[in-house]
Image 1 (cartoon, rainbow, N blue to C red):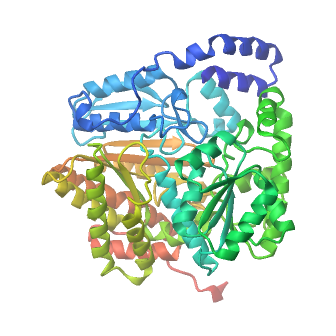
Image 2: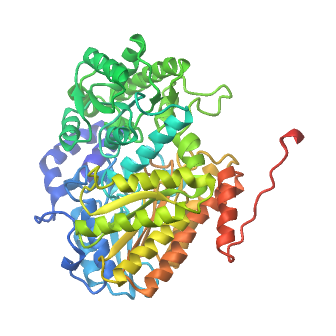
Length: 617
């Protein structure tokens, strides 16, 4: 990977004399270099009891690392890439082996420090300290542009950890399926339309984006998801993530027309370019209710987004042979893509940016995506319009857990426990959060039926601080009683408090602070001394290098009183840190949520902003 990235860097810098030499070197030695020290054993999460070690927490981290590299979970497992095209767990296999060795030797009086995949070593600490501290891509801001990443990654001094790839908390597509389901449901609510018979058009069937059609089915609409890669399209079909695959655009028009007439719930993978879909549907007067895009536009010049009117094979050849022309073609397509979307939105389509940097890259390409003020985008981020005000402001975000026993029965038991907790909470929950509660009860009841487990026995649901603490405490008691085995708690970084991302997670913060990263840093520091088993902080993730700072955690529950104390302290902070920031920005839902949090915890004291009377302006 380092050789490949170095070659890309030289190409960008037009070092012609080095390109030929390096390409030959890559051809001769690249495979040996990349796969040197790669283990020959099966890469998967094993039951925690099978891991060697002196510390149960360290064994749990070993389990999660192997789950991130499971062939069924990882996008490019041999290259240590979990998802997003470049979201790495480590930079090479030597780092993996050394990390696993350190974890197998670790005691509860040591902490392992990981620097962009490189294990610095075991340092003396104490039992309540994190067992592992992870950083990825934390370069000085002035050296945080995409070209900088190519250089530093080629040198082996920094890596792109995405969000949950480099923090060992990815659980396969289930996480994004749930988030996308919530987004689609609330998208239809926003336009006051029921999903049944409604049409959702989007693109991307890769690692994260492959969840879209499955989520559309769960939400209950018609989904058309375009993808140019035949291999991944047919893989998603074989996995049951899409119901049908269509390669002819006219056949797609007929099939969607029939589905709309019959109000079907169906997901269709169109093997072709999404630009053609938007243009054809406009010409044929097919009304689109919801529209978005989830291609990897954080990485547009290396296959994250493919231009129209060029075959998949031709585009791949162009990336290698003529990268400048490829960039030109991508930007031409982004302009066409945007023009077609604009025509549909004039007819009433609700379009939202899905946090993949579509609007950002379209604006850089000169597409017509800016609002009249010349500052904002004409279309909102899904966080601005949907997830922010409907979920994050109220403290609801992607709480997840992994059954470290690897036993499906444990997962089923935890589903029952979580559902019972949520149903009990819903009896007294205020009206402001009843919809969120019911959505999650509906989700957890259907979780087994939807067959979402890939890799480890894991589950996700959107919960607030109270819900997370009560569910975690119920798990800890069940462990203490011998009903289930060890549980690993975590969350996506895409949450209330862990991520500062001005075009996604914090895009609905309008006081000017969305371009600051204080919240993410506060979050990871606060988690580290409140009981997290491991913490992570990354530059980059989802929207691109230099565009976001995001933090995450993992927490092991072992049924002890100490674990109960940790979860109460850390989970409360992990959510309310973000709510307090959103409240200070005068977000109405967050003001409600932080006032409610102060009522439940007398030690919490947060300043509430004074809202200025609009008539005074």
